[in-house]
Amino acid sequence: MTKKKTTFGLRLRTRGGAAIQKRWTRIVKQMKVPHKCPSCASPSVKRESTGIWNCHKCGFKFAGGAYVPSTKSGLASTRTKVTA
Ligand SMILES: [Zn+2]
Image 1 (tube, rainbow, N blue to C red):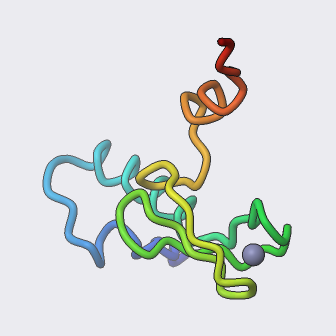
Image 2 (cartoon, rainbow, N blue to C red):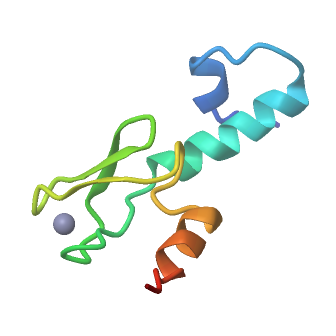
């Protein structure tokens, strides 16, 4: 029986043990899946750089998490309303 290995972590050469490699693979997988655009709602958002996300459909560029477009803390900050 041959077990197919996910090569995300291996390709990017994560240093450290197997646990770190596994974690990194999970993060990269999450990073690679198409994310929903907050502007046009189409799943064509891709990571341009760390924390920078770009929608290929409408050209909407926004800042988000380093590995996912929206983080828990980011959502909390958008929910918070400034009261004068
Ligand atoms: Zn868009």
